[in-house]
Amino acid sequence: MIRVENLRKKFGDTEVIKGISAEFYPGKVNLIIGKSGSGKTVFMKSLLGLFDIDGGEIYYSGEPLSQMDFKRRKALRTEMGMVFQGSALFDSLTVEENVIFPLKMFSVMSPKEMLDRVNFCLKRVNLENSNKKYPAELSGGMKKRVAIARAIAMNPKYLFCDEPNSGLDPQTSIVIDNLIREITQEFGITTVINTHDMNSVMEIGDNIILIKEGYKAWQGSKSEILSTDNEDVNEFVFTSQLFKRIKQSHQTASARE
Ligand SMILES: Nc1ncnc2c1ncn2[C@@H]1O[C@H](COP(=O)(O)OP(=O)(O)OP(=O)(O)O)[C@@H](O)[C@H]1O
Image: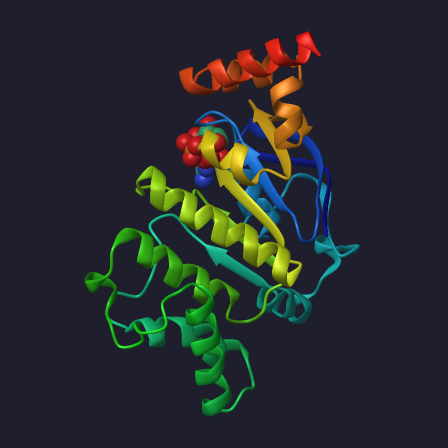
């Protein structure tokens, strides 16, 4: 579990994260949503310890990040998997070499154990026959699956994904969303995802945090997002015509019951 208490982050005199408190649960897909520029990326990078924060605290399984020394932070890093925008694979390495990379960096496994783990992870993302392929030979969806396989190679407690569906068609996005949800539940991972994608919100949003202008405007689940009267949620959801209609029909159905 990750708990954030009154997190603040400034750049110069401008406060970008203005006192956000939130909890992210294991075995759940925790989504951070909000308009472009609302502070989602800065918030996630702060969680990862990539920014020095200006106030508040982040607790990993109850342990305050600010109190961790270099050695402890390095150990925490091995418990984190990351899937960045654009997959961020090494183009000059094969699929197998990409996935084995964190194991070589951080694990004490034998070469045979590493290869077994790579094959397990590639099988888990349905890419068992692609070990020797290079990223340039893969589709966008396959690259994302390799990135997910690499992110879970170290058996992480925490998984961070920044816009995992960017650049993917709607059908492939659903495949990736479902894969992330399954892996999250199967391995009890605390998964935190930054997204703009309303489809993802409705498919996999166990715990959703809406950020608006650096504040937490709302927190709830995918079913609550359809029934809430929160103005900020409605403003955000209603920018999508499709979800505007879904929400309206849900409210009409609820009123009839
Ligand atoms: N390194 C930085 N230095 C100064 N300002 C920054 C820096 N990084 C982000 N910001 C500012 O912080 C604000 C929030 O940015 P952030 O990238 O977190 O938005 P976002 O919600 O992730 O947007 P998007 O959905 O477009 O990625 C913006 O006003 C941005 O200009």
